[in-house]
Image (tube, rainbow, N blue to C red; front, side, top):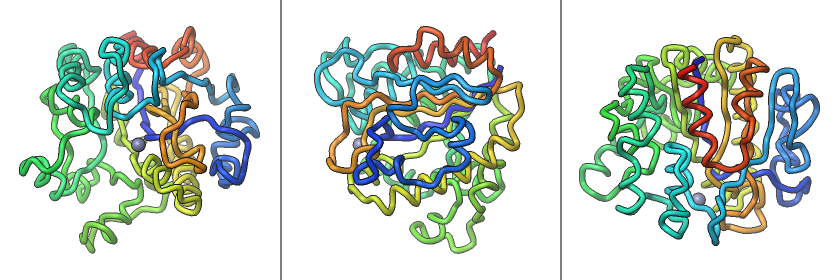
Amino acid sequence: MRVLFIFLDGIGLGANDPLTNPFARAKMPNLNKLLEGRSLLKESAPFHGEQATLLAVDPAVGVHGLPQSATGQAILMTGINIPAELGYHYGPKPNPEVAAYLKEATLFSRFAKEGRKAALLNAYPPRYFHGIDSGKRLYSSIPLSVINAGLPLFKHDDLFAGRALSADFTGEGWRTMLGFIDAPVMEPPHAGRTLGTLAKKFDFALFEYWASDYAGHKQNMDDALRLMETFDGVLGGLTEAWDDDGLILITSDHGNMEDLSTRKHTDADVPALLIGNKSAREEFTSGMKDLTHVAPAIWKTVMD
Ligand SMILES: [Zn+2]
């Protein structure tokens, strides 16, 4: 069965506190519907509903300190308890020790080796590649896994041709931040339908959303609310277009945005939200406790 993995950076399950947690305030009717009236909060998990399953998953994996992006994403890509092997959490970008795990052991490499179609659906702008080429920018763990598997990163021409999606979902940022004044812009539900259509071309598709972690570090409630209300619109379009022969997974590498009282990451559990066929959801989430259980569950769902 195909899997669409929407990776939301820096999203934990937090307290039902509208002063600090945007998820206690954001208007997210599509998410509420999936969770039968609940919000994305600590008190909502575990939940096993008709359309969705929500679990709380531990990103600290038994290692002291706050979880970080390079190791967290590397766990999601491999299922290996890298912080336990190295003795530390690390991020945001992988150091050589973390990068060493992101070769044959990742989902992208393993699916490619098995002849399964896998893709990262984000479109990256020219300045991203310039940054990489000039050495000013390092790949984060997810795109590094894609590159190491011999798969392409999508570019601006893929965005314009509708083969990839903007990192902000709607494409607005390509116009306002990147200077592509004729970049295609979509309303959130349209972006969600597009994401679903693109995902159906692959056995395993991943979309990476980093703005949530950024808003958490900035402690900006208005930004966080706007981002999550946009995401909810995406979710509405996506679930409307999605059918029962695929599973949608939404999870994160560590908490951050769910507690805007601190600019640091948090030690909160992260959500594992599954949408799709009920028995596939049950199988995916059985025995799932920490972040190392996610990659094996993706592998099994795709390969079965
Ligand atoms: Zn961060």
